[in-house]
Amino acid sequence: MKNRLILHGGAWNIPDALQDAHMHGIREALTAVSAELIQGMTALDATEMAVRMLEADPTYDAGRGAFLNSKGEIELDAMIMDGRTLDFGAVAAIQNVLHPISVARVVMTESEHCILVGKGAQDFAKAQGIEETTPEDLLTERELATWQRLQKDSSFRTHQPFDKPMGTVGAVAMDNDGNLAAATSTGGTPQKLAGRVGDTPIIGAGTYADNELGAASATGWGESILKVMLTRQLCDLFGSMPAGQAAKAVIKHLQERVKGLGGVIGIDSNGNYAFHHNTPYMAFGYMEEGGKIVVNIQIRK
Ligand code: GLY
Image 1 (cartoon, rainbow, N blue to C red):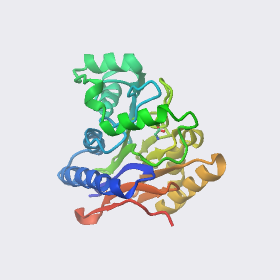
Image 2 (cartoon, helix red, strand yellow):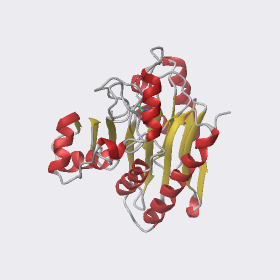
Image 3 (cartoon, protein in one colour):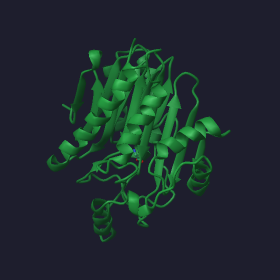
Image 4 (cartoon, rainbow, N blue to C red):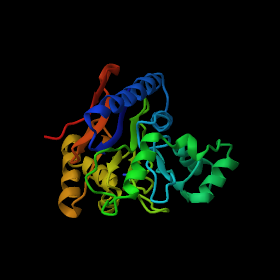
């Protein structure tokens, strides 16, 4: 039995006033999902369940609470991957759904495709019986105020050091049978152009899982994570070094090769955890042997 579960709630700056909320959401999801994993839930179901809980929590930049794009709209990206088969499903720039991760799941299981975007993804979700929601349901006063402020700031760049968390959410799990899965969901970057797709729904960039290598989920500045294919790079390194060292190595590469900013969580094929970031903070937590929950917000030295 090798139950493993590790979650992140984004990186970047997480001001003191927001740290408790970031850690609380992760703790709640870890507590609920690890109990199910221990009872035999599959890794795939566990990652979807954890990400759904974090999408519903307005603290994070995923589902409810997501950043607005430059047009004042919420467009969401998500991906889920099954380490047994390498099957994956992803959606990008989808609107009016609270749980894009569940749309990604049905893209994987109920369509012939791997990735659907925009209106096509929305129509497919509807056809699969996934409830449509309203822009108002996803919008928080906090993000409306941020959007109004940034609209007046022509010097703002989507990846510049920001006074708010970039609260992409992610989950990586190993189940009783040793199967791995990963899932990630995000509203992307503030003020992104309409139609922008980040790292989250791109295989090997924001999300990856292969039973033979490991599984991982990333957070941070998507354009830089895309360039180095961060999660696949981490999974490749798992074979040649301890998991914690591999996470440090890929973040170092992200920083040195493309001046990137981000964080990553993962599990290697032997069930060892990996986590590291070069942003000031990363909200993350994991289930220890015996079910004890550990939640943290900063490990960077
Ligand atoms: N890492 C999330 C994004 O850049 O979209």
